[in-house]
Image (tube, rainbow, N blue to C red; front, side, top):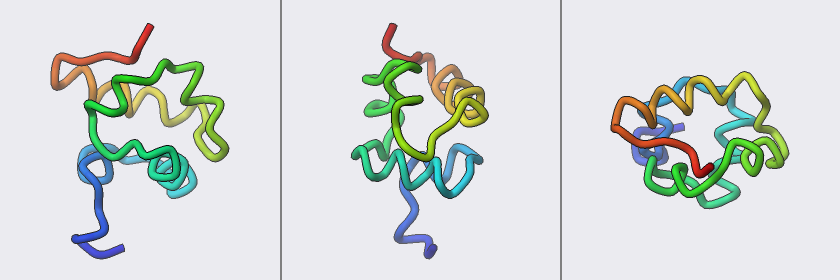
Length: 69
């Protein structure tokens, strides 16, 4: 993956490649887009498992954001 191919989330969060592909496939490339999803909805994405949630949550929290309830 080149620098140009990286999304905002790729730069901020260390998660597995399958989780990254799941987010990109759902059109989630920014923290703002991520905040529009609940944890339950995210876990429904193929390739994104519970190990990714703490990393995603930390990135959101650092910007004063959170998952959709």
